[in-house]
Amino acid sequence: MTATISQENRADRLPFFDTLRGMALVAMTIYHFSWDLEFFGWVTAGTISQPGWVLFARCIASSFLFLVGVSLVLAHERAIRWRMFWARFGQIAACAALITIATWFAIRDAFIFFGILHAIALFSLLGLALLRLHWFACVAIAIAVFVIGQNFASPFFAPPWLIWIGLSPVPPLSNDFVPLFPWFSATAAGIAAAKLAKGANALESIGTVRLPEALEAPLRFVGRNSLIYYMLHQPVLIGALWVFTAISGPPDQTASFIAQCETQCAATRDQTFCTAYCTCVTDGMKREGIFTAYLAGKTDAAQNETVQRLVQECTAKSEQ
Image 1 (tube, helix red, strand yellow):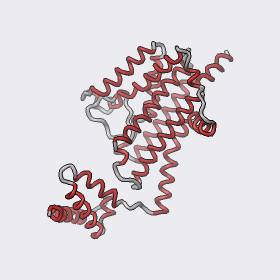
Image 2 (cartoon, rainbow, N blue to C red):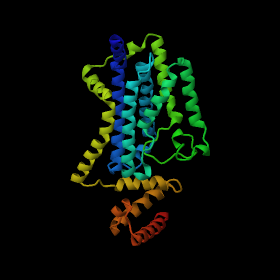
Image 3 (spheres, rainbow, N blue to C red):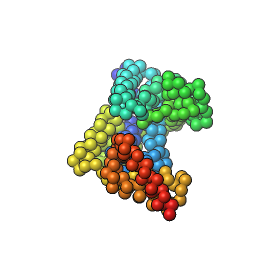
Image 4 (tube, rainbow, N blue to C red):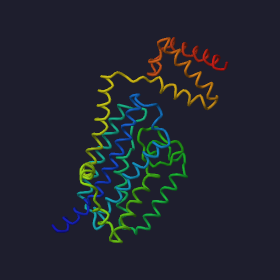
């Protein structure tokens, strides 16, 4: 019995998969730090909504969920080790609940009720049902989940208690939403890939691929402590940026505001008009001393009237 457990533990900790998990966490940190920079106004508003950043975020989430499937095969394919599974499941579920509670108080309008940790907990449980299937069946399930998630929606799934399924016609407002459809496809694909590699006697060879030690050691450490790292990295990043901003003062958001204004304006007017108009409105609000209040959404009724007057005046001037 001791030998069997030891072998399973070695399989479960194949170093390269810890390294891959560490890489995913580093990529996630880069994305979250960019989000934080935008939140504090240090980069142009809308930066992380650009297609490249959106694709980057989806690749990160997919890699996490794919590795969940690989880890399930490594740890439980021979026999489900329930005690270990429920212990890990409980840790992830507790952290997911903590994130929901924290974001409910911090950003109630877009709080995280089914983010990446919620998905990992659920997909780990659902993934157990796939461990006895042939790898080809897992591929078929992954394709089906992805296709349904991309092409089907119904008002039936719109109620709050069903929104996590991911088939509502209108996605909810949340800073991190990773629903069952289509995201479970990544975990099913991970299970299929691990089963296929294991059947070809290649899984352990892949899992023991090594990188230069100076690069691999920190990545492997982060990967082996992924949950702790995940829970701590954002408070650390946000805290550091808050201190930096408090010391240096808030960033000048003039360029960011003008760029955002020109983007919105370009939907209906030409570039020459938009450049003149947005610059005029910005200069006018600064001259009236209401630019900072407007950016913060704290203008009063009189200041709102001033903004409307500036909009009318700048529209007329820019049309000339």
